[in-house]
Amino acid sequence: MRKFDTKVQHLKYKVLREVARLAWNDKLLDNIMDIPKLIVPGKESTMRCCVYKERAILGERVKLAMGGDKDNPNIIEVIDIACDECPVGGYEVTNACRGCLAHRCEDVCKFGAITFDSNHVAHIDKTKCKECGACSKVCPFTAIVSRKRPCQNACKVKAISMNNEKAAMIDNSKCIQCGACVYQCPFGAITDKSFMVNAIDILKKSQRNAANGNYKVYAIVAPSISSQFSYAKLGQVVTGLKMLGFHDVIEAALGADMVALEEAKELSEKGLLTSSCCPAFVQYIKSAFPNLVEHISHNMSPMVVLAKYIKETTPNAKVIFIGPCTAKKAEAQLEEVKQYVDTVLTFEELQALFDSRDLDIASLEEGVLDNASYYGRIFARSGGLTDAAAQAMKEQGIDFEIKPVVCDGIEACRVALLKLSKNLLDGNFIEGMACIGGCIGGAGCLTHGEKNKAEVDKYGREALETSISDAVSMLK
Image (tube, rainbow, N blue to C red; front, top):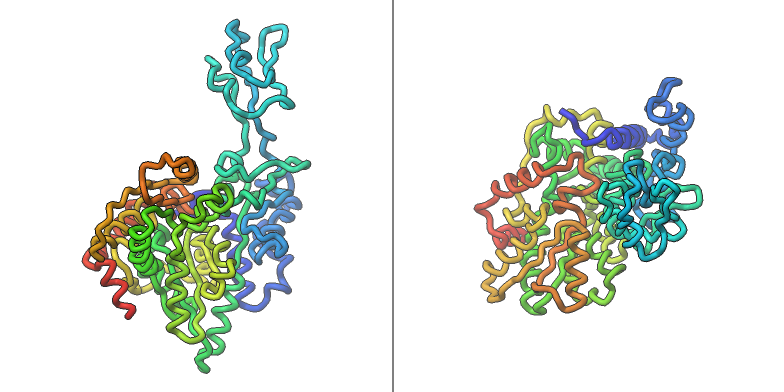
């Protein structure tokens, strides 16, 4: 069974796996230069113009697998030498143009960017074109098309442009670090930094000092894990994590239960709230709608709430969050968060860790993961947080009518926030998820698709007998 959606993901995984193998054995610094040759051993390359360029790009991937550019605060980085195959972009007239007499494209263009040659064929003056797309919409032959790069199409916050060398360039002031461009780039030229080496170091030190009881490492796993690692059972993934050196594995869904109870109270007290669980959504509000920051829930995300509980109740504990989200890596760097979360891994990186230790998780016995309620687990998909907030109100006897606006993807978030900024929103609670489908659509997932929602709901139903309050009360 395929572990990944695309070959780009598989290539990224191979680099991560080799970096991890060397890191486990304390040989990383001495053997960094050998990794590209291990992945592309022959003299022929089928991915690039020559094996030398391919290895040079792999060398950049190795750097990102080891933490990337320390001077760049963004989790998402561009490998410039890998970004040279896509068209520059913009609206272009194709050979489907029939030289019609109507010239609707010319009439609708407000900037005088459309001209015609002697055969009445349209041409676009790039110096005048504003990329509005009006000409494309009115062409009866659909002869005018947008040649935007996949990364630009994927980035709904318009944080990607082109530099002088025609490589993608990220505007950190706009980027919300959701990773949509990472997943959509067909050449893997945009990718997320990995802190996997940090995680390995934490695990190794805990094992070396186990006899002295120095510290224990806890894995907090996002509920979307139930839709990943489809070739194995979830219980086997739990066992695999413990074999990597984790003392215990806890559901982030328990943190979601904790958040649901508090968020329900906060919403009823304030009367209007935007969710705070998705760090990319929160960052989008701060960068694009700063006047709405006051409405962001004061509750920390489930990851942070649960990590804080672990740190406060377990001396010297270390916490590693594992999930589908690149933005979680950025969240973990925040001053108010980094004291609780030691590092963050994606599911892609976890797969690399398993294979770097030659763990066939499909052959392992099943462990148990039963910390949370149904409502905490469905936080992983769009609409889940809203359902949980409504249930939390019911369980706490809060008399408040929640009027949710569920935003599936950052474009839907933009529309809702725009309405709120103009006092036109028909609702009192905005559930914002930057990724389509919610966390199950995160860039760090092994697989993406509608079936993932069904798997999350199925996983949630296994905990139907546990209420949100019951799940949280077990902590006391």
